Structure formats: C-alpha cells, structure tokens
Amino acid sequence: MKKLIALTILFAPAALMAQDAAQQPQVLPPSDQQSPATAAPQDPAERNKMLYSLGFLLGDNLKKQLILDNEDDYKALSQGMRDSLLNKASQTELEAYKPQIIEKYQKDAEIINQKRQAAQQEYMDNFKKEKGVKTLDNGAMIKLSRKGKGKAPKADSTVKVNYEGTLIDGTKFDSSYDRGEAATFKLTDVVPCWTKAIQYMKPGAKAKIVCPADTAYGNRPLGPIAPNSTLVFNVELLEVL
Image 1 (spheres, rainbow, N blue to C red):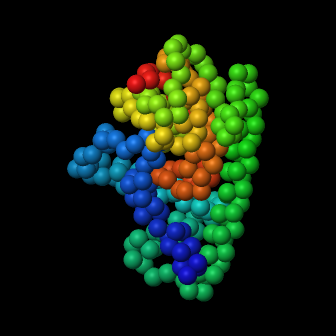
Image 2: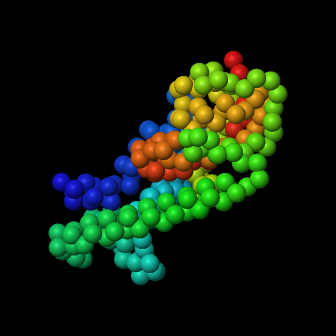
C-alpha cells in the first residue's frame, strides 16, 4: 500500500495542484476570494501559453519531489513524459523499474525535507539575531517596524488587519493586499502564532512575524505550504474591534 501511495503522489502532480487550489491556506476564516484570471484562453497563442504554464507548474511541482542532477536526467524524464502523453509505447519495462522509482522518490523526499528544515532553522536563527526581535513563549518571533498607538488586543479580541504571508524563500501564499480588502477575524480563530504575536501590536503597528511550524500548520500540508513549514508574515494592525 505504501508503494502505491508513493507512486500515486509521484505521478499525479496535476492532482496535487488541484488540491492546492482547493486548499488555500487560511490563517484567517475563509473569505470570498475571486481569481483574477477566470476566463479560459480562446485563441491558439493563448492556449499555447496556458499549456506552457501548465507544463512549467508541473515541472515546478516535480522538482519539489525529485532531485535531478544533470541535463541527462531532465532529458530522460521529459522523454518519458512525452512518450506517455503521445500514447507511445514505453521504451522500458515499467514494472521492473517501479521499485527503483519508489526508492528514489523516498530518498529524494528525505533529502529535500532535511535541506528545507536546515534552511528554515538558519532563517529563524538569523532573524532572531536581528535588532528588535522578540521571541515569544511559544517560539514565534515578532519585530515591530512601526509601534502604533492605543490598546493592544487580548487573546480573544477581534481585529482588522492587512497582511502578507510567505514561505522563507519569499513564495507568497496569501495576501489581503492582493485581495484589496483588509481582513477581520477573532484571535481565537487563527493559528497560534498569530494569536500570540498580534497581542504585542497596537493599532497602526506594523510587524514581521516568523512562525515556526508548530505554531502554524504543523505537519499538515496546505496548498503551497509543505508539512512542517516555517511561515513569515508582514502584518499591519488596523483596528481592534
């Protein structure tokens, strides 16, 4: 069963992207978000661009799961995909290579995860050293770039904020700025990192908040957020309601 699951994950990046679209990370309660591009491409040039974009995203998904060392690796992989998509006969005995495929996927996944965890720890260590960074008792870190005025919210307060959420490499997964609308939510309804960190802000304050995985989504994958991901938020507290 584990082998079947591994193969399914490896060979279904399109399905994974569909899940990404359906499982957008929600640091806030779900909102009525609309995609800016909903019309299907009509003319051939636009169709080609759409298909190219799909291929690029498929490749981007694959490289998050596999380690390809050189140009020959890329050529062999792309040739196999091309033959399959064109309904050509396989040039290899597929069943004979499935054990090696599963082994590679598992080993590569372990190496990729180890590298990602090391990069995240380095990011947090470096951020912690920056002037003005406060480490909270749950491990979250906050650095105010603007202090704000008035009363700070409590753990059960409702607040209005603008924010942007990214991975440590800058990959953006959520933004109220992009939606053009500030978000309102109760601090009991968000990830623990936010519940704690927002209490250190006053209306008008701006801050960078770094959330270790166990204060965010933990080992749950969510959209573009891999399991055990450190998250970075730039937050502006507009109002305590």
